[in-house]
Image (tube, rainbow, N blue to C red):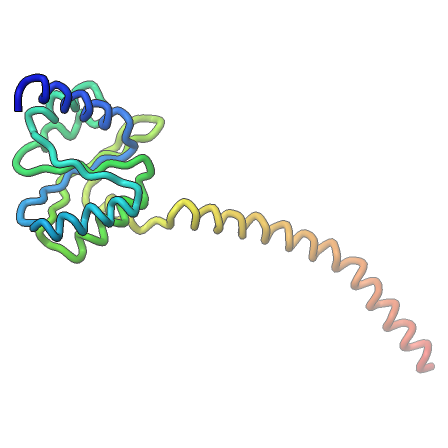
Length: 176
């Protein structure tokens, strides 16, 4: 790989490090081609990408980005899993990690408006257990709809109780 190719690679990695909302470093040592392909397929389904890193180039590209804390972990065989939405890729990685002991989670970063926060294995598992965005929106809709429905039922109960009272009084007068 000549110097211009390395500069182009560093520029594209720098762009990835600046744009991604979540990044996970994994050690893929021991994975065969079929397992690596399966991992990439699962990540693609969850709108995430995986890129095998050249550590020296990645160390240059990661400088002055929100992911700069990960530079110390760029040793040995590393791959970067990155995405815009952090939950689906975290689910995919957690699922793959549970079924395959060759892939090792090293470290990760979750980028928010207030800055970046490091992800350890426990936080990755917690992030992976969150419901998807669509599921959360559905739950929110049911909560909002439930409140409105209960309010309407309460308002409807006042005239309904009045009508039942009138019917009971009419029934008593009809019996008497």
